[in-house]
Length: 496
Image 1: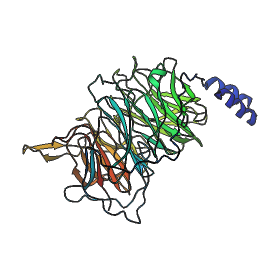
Image 2 (image 1 turned 45 degrees about the vertical axis):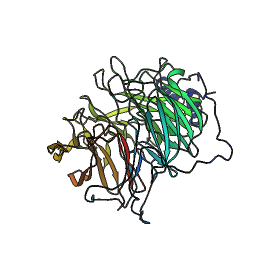
Image 3 (image 1 turned 120 degrees about the vertical axis):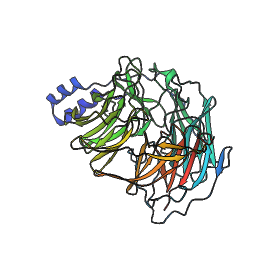
Image 4 (image 1 turned 90 degrees about the horizontal axis):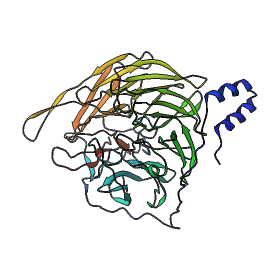
């Protein structure tokens, strides 16, 4: 049985002796119970099963071992899409602040399938989720060599109607010795990290009356408090679903009309308690979407703030950023811009300010020094790096660096970062441009100082945040490059 949110609140208010509070809260906050249509069968790995030794696989090229890791270096796992703290920041230290001639050295590279995912790393295992021909494939690799421990695959049928690739959009998640993936057609899978054995799997599209999406199902799952949380959207208005992380059974559903967007859910501590933040959206006419604040235990909806461009073919895809102990920043492209919200003591959203010219297409803004930094812009030509004050919502500065690189034809090509991504570690920021440029920057409210820049490769759609683990940088090249190399996962040595 599910614990009804109304019962949970009643018990809480009886304890507090607040009849008035109960009456007001029950009018504004309601949670719905949903029936689980198909609880999955759960398997267990064979007794005594161990992972095979890592082995070379086709498409793997090993270049050279990385420099030794400094004994003084701080390191961290990267178990989720946005890193250990879900904010594109890492505590790692002893990293390069300048590039050697020719750029950072490659450790290994692996031809990958089609996707817009990045690897996740924990417990000495790297997991990457791609599509090869008519199968979605989960591969577990050795982080420093690229050799494979195991792989798991299942069939998939999907064609992107807008011409983008047909692979998964959501990176895997590692938690409690398990691997969780959400495929482009809403197949939710749980594997044993050590052996690759499938523990349970659900086809959410077949089991639920799931809404349609512009580019397939794209939000990364969130694993927290024993639950796998998936933005969903169904005909009976289950906007968000939580499944037991060990059994796959439905725990609760949040009722709201907004469907899943391409932004990943996150947890933020607001008003003294952890809250679930889901930036919803999805395909709808007229377009709808915005920020849901949800009780993590029960799925009860605290409040919903509408924030979505008014164009039908638009998406919400930038993950919300918690600011302080009560505020959250949202941003969307397509001429919408950014907004800073405050969750008040009544658990209702209040608008603090708007920034119409700070609309990020997919990048999660970077919060540093009381400022938000990010590459705003819907398309390549109208993108630039900007900084906005959290206190005032005003633009501190913008930068649109331009340079040239030589092409094999002998001609020079004019370059910019365009719609890039920012990763912060070791007191500096690493900027990955969408054509394969990598820069090292100092970002501050006073401006941007570019310390170094190199061209890793020249390929379009380099849209995924780099991954950092034990001083190694992993970058996903999603399209063939100018030299004819296939899409690749590349490991670079970033150790100082």
